[in-house]
Image (cartoon, rainbow over all chains, first blue to last red):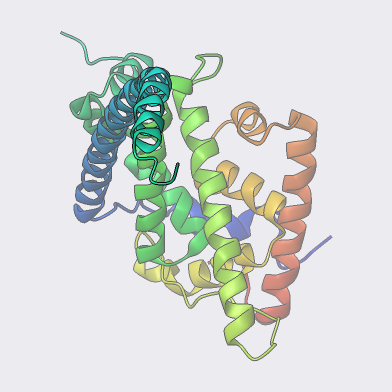
Length: 95
Length: 189
């Protein structure tokens, strides 16, 4: 048996008399600042999603435009080639 | 009109109601702060932990499933956040103390200690600081926060028997340290 502590939990007496400590008012202000910061972060994310969606639409339209233009140019260039060769044959310099 | 229950406050916090967070804070900040200060034994760091805990509550109120008391959930967050802060401090100290791995407890005067208990409280908290984490947690929740053992078991995710075993070992460890540091001090005042 331990003679220094006749009641074995006596050494805990100071804890039983301990008063509750209180945090400073600045703690709440810090929490509030964090909650507002978190709300501010969420807005740019929404904006970025909209920008990405708009970019995707523009890209699709451009791609469609390029494909259409490529199909049209195909038929035009054979006509142009025909004109150019007739021009060349019209200019026969040597018989 | 009675004040809203904790669970109701959490539902409102999850919906972005900062006033509900303030209400919960006013009700429970003292629990969180006193838990944190028992681990960290520095007021500034305990305040940072308190701030972190309530910020986590703001972010994750929607994840509270309601299968325990709100205070159980809060204490769990407070314990985990305090232990993380302690580990970070110990890592910083290891690198700055030129390889000295023996980390002394802070010289801590608990702001709630009675004048006549100052020295004993200081020794007691120094001894608490040296306990292994699980014994420390069981001891702080049971003897500093004075939470019922069944709730301590729930907070720690342990059985009641495991908590009681941790407490027996914690008290034995504390007694041994106090005797070693103050061999002539009698306990009866």
